[in-house]
Image 1 (cartoon, rainbow, N blue to C red):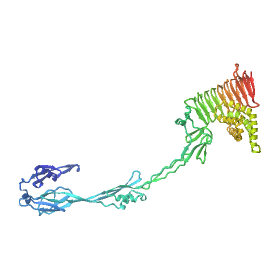
Image 2 (cartoon, one colour):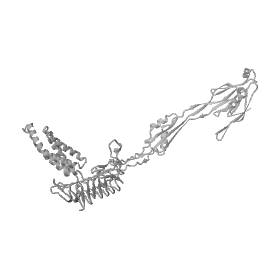
Image 3 (spheres, rainbow, N blue to C red):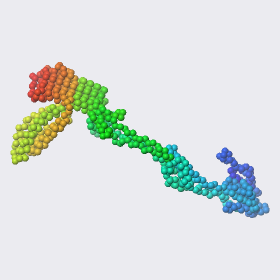
Image 4 (cartoon, rainbow, N blue to C red):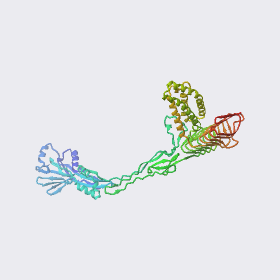
Length: 627
């Protein structure tokens, strides 16, 4: 029967199942040996004809005695011949790793042996292989050494027990490859022009001792370290920004939603914190230099309104205004221009320079400037304050407008405080007598006389000041009001505290003196206000107030210089007008007798106007009422 199998052994195993006998009772003929196609990718089976030798009989032990046998011990083939009618011993050779020579001739497949045959066995031996390769990374920053270790194989014939048919089978012993020499590894690296100074010998030695071989980075170049540009720290924002108080629990006016960055003279705008740092060149493993990028020095440049200091490492503002960084130049813009109305969309406007508004100032808006304010429209129900001049090319309606600083202090309160200081000096002179031989009761008696004699004078001074303070709700008045309260508490009435504690007099004297000194330092430059008409407003200026059109209606005007109505036909109907030097008007009061109060503080002051009835004129506290 024909059997297809990849080897004779597989065919014999299949035949044993079919014929239900062992291989000693089968006879094999090779019809076609196994083969390969497509370079060994596809294996083709061989064809073997196998048949039983003879029918089995019950006396199997007698059959064995008559058959020959073969056995393999330590690579040596031992053959025993059969009896007369016995079966000869057979070996089956189909292992490509073993060559079998019978009587000097190489055999393959089933071969019958006798004890006279000379059988030689030659086993295949595969030598171990050790290879050393080296290569560079793409950027030449690493040299990689590869050691390939392929073990060898020494094949031998496996022992086989005594049998009539024996298959020649191989096994092998693995031969470990020898490690490469260090010099061989270094030579491979030299062939790639690797700089030996960068080679890490310890890495090579570690790789050599790895049993199965492998690869490792044995040399590394130095990457270039790029320099860094100089660093500039800015102390201002370059654009308008949202009021950060909206993110807190502070009480905030909803119209203060936008803040315009502003600076004052002397403020530091920018500092060069870190100079430019040069780069450090790198090198590849082959010694090629890799150029590093040097850091750039970003120069500080000062434009208008700014100056360079400290060896050009610091920019300082030389004017008030809005800081700006544009095209590498830091400057301070003294004027901002609003090309439209200032209303809820812009919010309140605070700027340390000049402000130009080419529209109106809408209801409930606050505009404050460290310089001048120019409005080309009207001012409605707003609060406008400038340290410089204010020019309104329209009307001021139900608003508060102030130009300059410490206006009421300079023109009114300071003279009152000076008078109070003179009175306190008198109290102090009496109190200082206690440092001599006078007893406490004598001092108290004398102070009581001064308290009584000065009470009316003090009351009148404070009353006049408080009446004027009612015209203003400025925060600067709070400290002044506290001074007046101290004067009343310490120096007036039968319970005047100075009668029991004379030390309070010296304390009050120093407090008033200090307040006058500080106020004088805060006096600003002259600042004027010019507008067309005003109604139901409070307007005060550290300089003059000029009205160019029809006039004022129920408006309070305070000027540290003069109040001037340009048109002879101008009218002043109601309100209070106070100037230091001069008031020039058209018509004052109304035919119906609306109360209008006009006052000039200087002794040589003057009021020019046509008067209606119920008009009060006061020059150096000399009051005239027009009937």
